[in-house]
Image 1 (cartoon, one colour):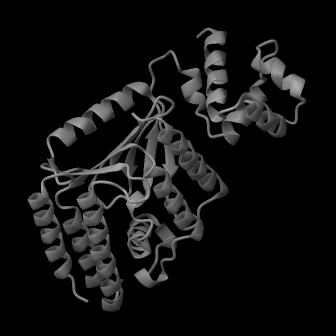
Image 2: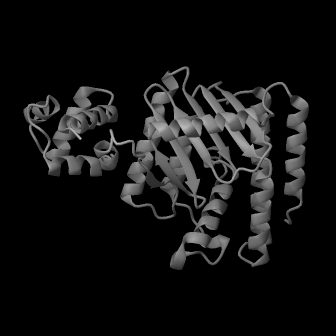
Image 3: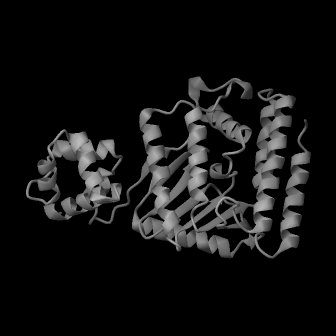
Length: 322
């Protein structure tokens, strides 16, 4: 690869980190401990960033060096980001904050879009339902926590910073002009089945099930109200919900605007693989739109389908003890 190709791409990536050149220069001065003129020379390509400086920048700002180096090779860039954990590291928190901040750019683009297909309740919609977030955190820790796995639901305490992050994520999501969710038809059934399993091995008490049961009902009430109105009350941006006719094996989502193109795949309940590779983004977005067209829309004018869907979900919730 020609040197100027990767370097131009690297400079373009730096520009994308900050909306104003002055902010980029100030951030680089603080990070690299260089004078303003030294930064200017590097950005103008009169002097190149050293290998150490490139490594420092990419590490501090979570920039994929592989993607920069392979920008003309046709390779896909993947990064595993833990979007939810009980004890997040500083790096986890920084990545989460960068992700949430990037969503702010979508609200100013009338064509910006968020679309997600999922087989568990989307975390971004659960910011006002802490017991449901706690349950999914508990399920993740039980399966993947190793020696730190909880011995009961009671012992699980989601971190405050993660709860704050979910609130910020939701506040940015509802500012996106076009929002689409595609639910697996069995999404509530899967949740009920999992709660019953943990109850059967005495890891969750009947009293705790009763509290979770109330929150599932409240979530269904919340979703039905939004879909009946046709929009999120905070922003009046349209909310669309579709029920998939076929099973969804995990969670898939795409964020799209003139400035941002990113796709993500949920793994292990609380982890997400994020990629900004253009080809993979296009493939996943096309798949999501095909999935949407083959699903049943229960938002909008079809009131009977919406009523029937939520009635069936409430009957499933009523089957829970407590």
